[in-house]
Length: 477
Image (cartoon, rainbow, N blue to C red; front, side, top):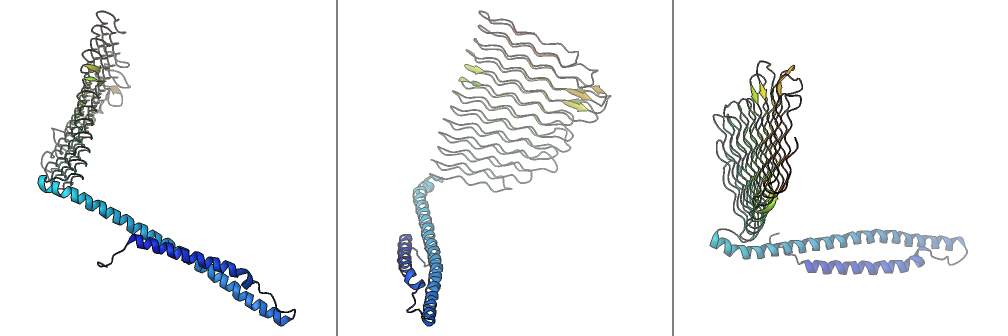
């Protein structure tokens, strides 16, 4: 079969010729149908009638066989046409691949990197880095996962156009801290998204998640940070989430990774959101704090905006604390991202709730995050995050966390509202969290409203923000 060659155009021509033969035979059979299937008797006697009937039956049998042959002929022609099409497609694909190889080979020889094509993935269990994509077009290869206690590989970079490769997961550890996840690869120089960071390895304490790759230098979104590794019995706790990658000149920042879970210690902190593109874009949201036994992880801070506009990333929510026997503290919400020259501040993250079933212990919700500051010239401050709730046992309640303060406005803009304090739980008996203060306006704008005290609690409400020096009113209480 290695010496068998097929010419698709010859097959197509042969199929057309065979179809023509079938058409000619069909016309001949149709012309002969009437005189051969209904033969007239030579006379009125029985013998003549019997002879006519016999010959007519031969004609009818021929027409039946002819119809079956025509059906087979049609199927045969269709098979030949399909075969010719398949050979033509394969030949065109081979020609295209050959042409691409001719283009890539000299560039690959000179630079070690093709002109067009995706980078190779790193092998699993080796921690090898992903390969870079072609100089012109292609996605970076994914980093290989790490072996035992080995860091995950870095994702490969893209070409001019393409997405960065994902970072490899960090290797697990049975005696210590899990290995860190690999960083995501950078997006294409002109356009592309940064690769997601690798997940941190699990262990006695969790490994950190890898950072997200930067977005394309001109247009591109930053990659999300990797999730922190899970902790088993360690007191350090879950791994930190990786930071989100920055946007390009235009583009949004990547989301921060979630903090790792912890069975005994505190949850991992969430990764910070990536900054927006230099000129324009929204900041990435902060990662959520990991659930922990003694304490929830703090949420990551949101990323800042671009110079000429956007909204700062929201702060990540604090992780919940789930200790059933001892004191329990929820994680604090992350701070909202700031506006730069123009842009609104991001909202602060919600504080994490705290739980304990031991009525002799205390559970305190995490504080809400501070709202981000508005852009220097124009922008509203971000709202403060709500404080987390505190729950103790089946018959009493813990303390709610304090609400975050509202962000200050730019020269023109309104201050952010203060966050409400966290509830003390459904059974009362402890204090609700204090409300956050409203953010101030600067030159023109209204002050932010004050945050309310936690539901059914004995906390203190926040103060309203001041109005602008030229135009504006104080915030509501």
